[in-house]
Length: 533
Image (cartoon, rainbow, N blue to C red; front, top):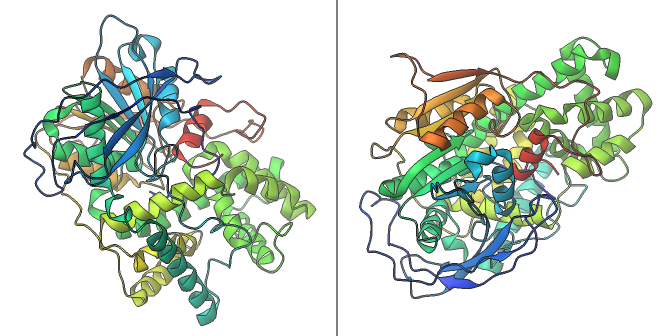
């Protein structure tokens, strides 16, 4: 679900022995029956690749078929990381995924192993991986370097000419992907990535796997569970994609949710008028933000931050309110002191795209455009996005252009698998009520689709990614599940099986995650989820 990441947190140097695994054959539709057993293979060759933050990290690579239906054909390489178990009690591999699609997962192994209680982490081999096409996996896609270089055209079309320019830009990106990666694009999709996960499981010699997925990683996990229910031991899904909306409808739902979250930001700024001097009326604060946007349309700050870049800068605040103090300070400096320097710095920290972001976006489009059908008639996009913009103007057109290459994608779409499942052990679903990136309805929908699952809700929480980010109550449920497999059970008829209070709002003076500062747990996690630098 739309990662906005540039300088993602890396896992360290890639080292590695490579093995080839020929996984069981499966298709998106014939998901109930396992295919033939994988051929015997050598164990993964793990080598130390420590980082300052994660000194016990190890790396390996794994060859998998580009096309899992042709296991003897061309292979590609996945980059893996591991923090190995140390306890006598071993509960198997715990695969972790930060979402995207397009997010690098190599750093997640170290983070999750460090964030879990030591006694629990010691019982698992925590496994991170860069999905096919991502990061250190090979080939890594970058369809059109410089696509997000500033200053881009205003995201809100200014008449027919502005709209035509946006359409041509989206077409150019789709064409560049097709020209550069015609042989690869048919196999960059969620089902193929889920089958890669089973190849990882086989290479680890595990009959079943445990899984923790965030954001898009929840959908990836649900697809894997549909393909291989008998190979799931435990599965925790945090901030859930709505399977009913993959992917066009889910993105339209995001537009409304992010607009609401932007209003929450404006209300927080108004409550902290002593610090930011932008007024005590949330509507007036929001109007001042749009006034800033209008000024930047004619005079971008330092020639770098125009309207699109401004939206990119403030969008991460919709994922994590820990960024609000820095964003509000930059907003205040621009409005009150006519000082654009803090705004430019905030853009560099939160909105600017580097090579990792270009790779992430290339995979984002490749997966979402391939996974499911998108409207091919631009008139449908125009009507739907103007209708949404009229009620939710904060990021609707920015999001439309982000996804617009799917209207012109050079590879035909697949049919998404039905992830309804009644063959799993208890699955833990974790969701904040005010999450903008994956709205609450998605968690409820998947909970209803997966029989025996348990829904834990962060009431009033608006952050995306609610475990291992500072909420002790949410973490207690995750830790209990990973320790024992037990999930909470609510009263009959209750939508949620357990409810936790949201974390307090940030204080205006609270340090935020910027270069040269020590980030808090929430900022570190959200950097890995791809929502800031």
